[in-house]
Image (cartoon, rainbow, N blue to C red; front, side, top):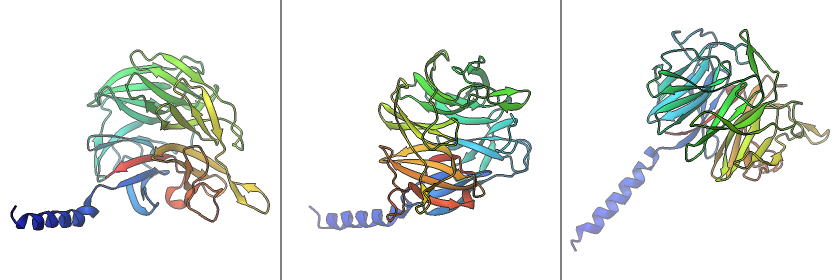
Length: 346
């Protein structure tokens, strides 16, 4: 063997070591009131604003077309972002759009060429990337598009019952792409206003025909805000799903939507008085051994934060001195009214 071979191998190893900082890193994008903010997945370091919207945008043709925003879906190197043209605190079934951006945050254009979306929330690609499903909260429907943004109609529509897509919110696709799980707010668009006549629930829908095959409509969780409004969902294990609730609590289900357990997401903020946190909660993501949950404090200017739990629902915050606290990223105005959460591999 040539004596130069070992030196070449050592040089290759050294080169790889030098290139390590250039390797794609995983971050979180947290959806705030009019923006998406970037944090390091490993330690919660804040990297800055990734997408900045405008609180006064009125349409996709505005100078800055991003306004109130809920979800991101990734296909290839393109980010698809749902937005709608009203304040997120309003009850308006406002027109919305799906906007596209590069992975560097550069605006590309509008995806939904036919329009018609009303307050779009969740997004999911399926059929091997040939179709995009949009949770049209104001449409009371799961709206279906082809891969270039042409409207194909509704996969499922509300029928004035809780066991239908009354205020669809977030999606979770099964591995075989036979079913999609979706949370609903139990809402109904009445003359352009979002009303809440039905129970919030989680539905299992067959993708081949849009039929609802399983449902659950849980009661209030412990220490919640006094109502139920199911929001985000993700897989904890191959056969276990975790579902977040805007009003509080994490619920764990099997794949047939049998409720397995519930976790209290509130925590003590004053040991002397026993006072507990006053939060509303957003979307949920599972990464390796942890569950990440966005939230904001409605008694403190809607400052946003991110909570972290172990897979069994026990708290796993960043304060080692307070193991009962699930706070991973502390309250901040940077992510005011935090709802969205997207795992981003840059």
